[in-house]
Image (cartoon, rainbow, N blue to C red; front, side, top):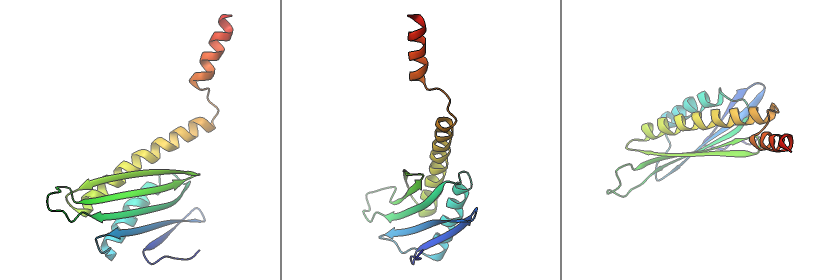
Length: 135
């Protein structure tokens, strides 16, 4: 796998998950990159089917915008993509907010995926079974 200049590979369970950090109107420092890697690594610990995490950090240069730091994450999991975005007054605050939101969304996705995979009946099949039983 070719490494990108702003990317980071994390090893987990013999596989690597790529975390790519990109910036718009902001220079990505090593401290910001390490902070994103730490926070996103905690999210990846909850679900081992995460293939890649793409982080885009943006600073809005308009002085009339109060929350000028935007963090967005695209998380690729098993053929789907979980996308979250948050705005805050500082870059570190927006990273915290977006990682917390991503953590909740990944847990929700994992529960939904495992529930569907376990073969538990859906509401539709229960309703159809009840209608057939009533006939």
